[in-house]
Image (cartoon, rainbow, N blue to C red; front, side, top):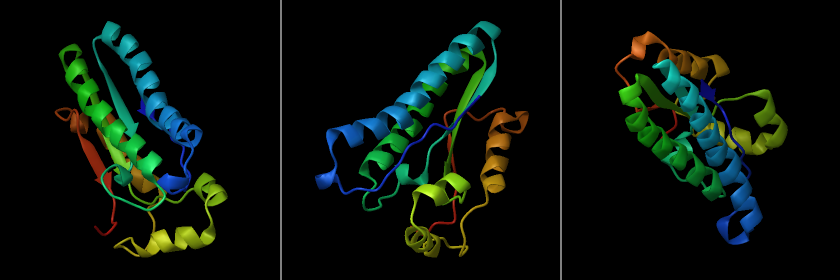
Length: 161
């Protein structure tokens, strides 16, 4: 199962309302937790399974206006590690992918062109990731090629530190 729950937005912490904070935390972290929990119930009864959660390099790095999103994605990484330890005795692996900037239609719809250009300049490769470049890592984590990995977060990033 691939968890791709996420909601963002840009607002400095001092201007952010509790409602804005809670909405991003609930959708991004809470949604991932609820989906993981539901999948684990099924996978435990089967005695096997793989879960790949979608986080973000924002869980490690700071960016102005992203405190709620960064906190939620860091939480997804911690949830992944904990769920992996709990699931391992049942033959279930839980890992996480953490992309930097990956361009897709929804992001272009909800983010200004100027801000996306600014983010793209921070990428060491001089461009954003293509969706398939992130998907390849998800496929790897879901496959038997990563059969010994659990509790890990793999960065798909060329972002400069």
